[in-house]
Image (cartoon, rainbow, N blue to C red; front, side, top):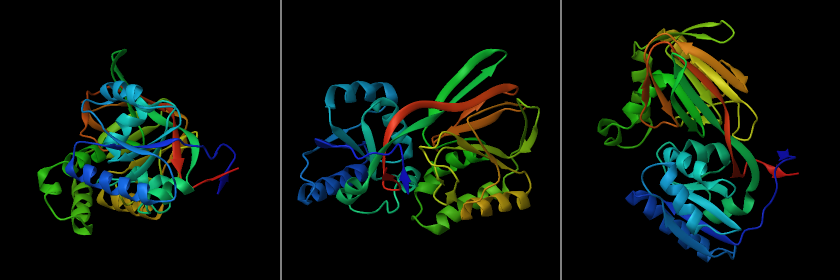
Length: 305
């Protein structure tokens, strides 16, 4: 697919970004070896991200990055959020790493291709993150941004289960993810909400997506570079949840796309951002979701005009 805003940039160097985990550093070494032996002919260097979110990484990258750098991530979706918010105008590509790796699957047709192939076949395009603000009693109580998705309700509890030792300690595979999905189907969490247009929701979850993959299996009809996001409501009954899950699996979830959306929750609920452990917001909080900070994304799903 050709896109009029996509272009093929020139690079002077590849900067591999790894995080603190042994797996990320192992994969980064593999990527470096492959890139150095490839025909790309680009210098390669490796940096390690800092804990603490966007601020320390913003300082690190502002000192270490140079004009013409391509920043290549070797980590999962949570770290991607911190890095993209710190990168500003430097182009970013996901190469490897992470558990679900929704971002890499959403931006590449074959996310497991060799790093040199992903870089060679990618084009650059402008994208925007999701911006989220919660206020209560007219006072802002929280502001966050997410790269791929924000979930209110049951998916936030799913992020808690996914981060647990009981989940991470099991062998990777469909059985582990199937049990995670069943826990959400069998959950009794529900809440009521009213949007700015007066529509009333009685749901187990409201999820806002900015990319085509969610929690490994979900397919969403939106790309990171689209100028809108997709809202997916999850019903409260098991039947409704199965129907929504089925729609996500085949890429036809219920819901509508928006450039901005506001609603008020009438119960205390958990909220997650890109699958990170959730925050809890109190009842009668007003939520505003819109498009936030811009960044430059490398993807193999598009071709330059």
